[in-house]
Image (cartoon, rainbow over all chains, first blue to last red; front, side, top):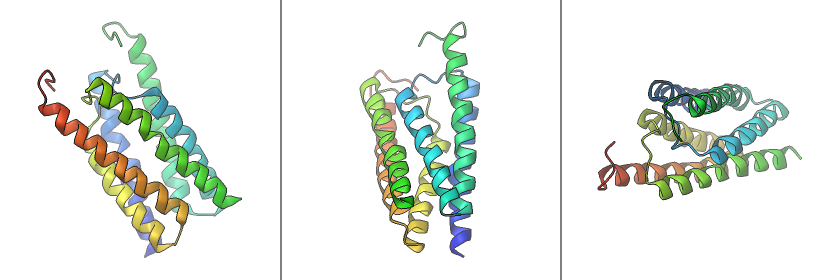
Length: 89
Length: 89
């Protein structure tokens, strides 16, 4: 039951990145997202991932692995769109 | 040691919201942040908080309590700025 709670929580926090990625992909605008935020969050999520491995917590592990993938994609979008024509910021 | 890892991870993922809040506060622009993302993430973080209580994991509990507070502040900023003059989106 507790594991299910963790898994549902993990699915939600992880899946929440999909609408954000979708928005950033469509609008090609990511200027409102702070670089400091994205980098700090990525490092933190990477440590959570290590923590999940250390305490053998599947929910923590899986959620943070997928979140890290989403964050990486978002940062790639931010770099690409920043250098694309028509995006000034 | 493992608890320290969790706490450092928690501090990073939680503190990462500060530069994002600072940016959103300064620019008064939050249009690039997806509502679906913010709401799903908040519900997920709320469940993580419950999970942290259930498994008595202080790192998970503390990190998610503070993240939820940051997310709530960000959503308030998004609502306020959306209705403020000069902000079209």
